[in-house]
Image (cartoon, rainbow, N blue to C red; front, side, top):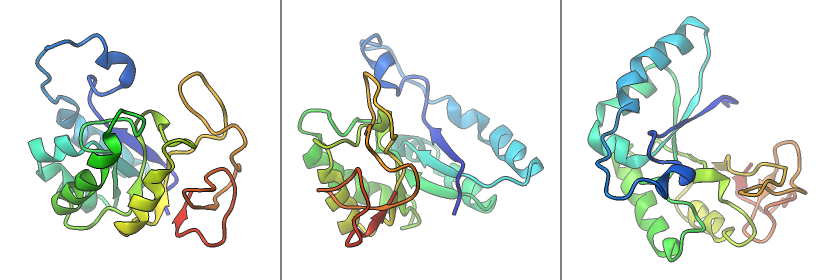
Length: 176
């Protein structure tokens, strides 16, 4: 298990930036730094899970091979960094999971919601992750901020279900 996670997203992906972009052209640039990141991790004998925004893999598919060749893991961070709480996103989520599965040849088993948008109203995503053979989620932060958090979430790893994301559920198939 990797305990070091990297949200591999570009400067224009975060929710706080989205409102200020308008029709500005968005060229992926973070992919140009992948070799430096991987080299730093290698030099420090560190392995990570890269939670990748799928459109970056579509743009430059070879980053998957670089990540995996370094002994790292690939995780799903949605295709376009869309928060689970985005209106009508629920209908798109399963299709995006399937697209990411194809891009990664089924190698992704972990998920992190953009802006940690997994909460009680978006817990439906857990059922979709289960149906797509995911085994863990890395989206729950046991605090409450103005943007995200599950304030009563357990502090250590536990199993979750869509009806109990804040506490252990032995029937859960997804581990947090």
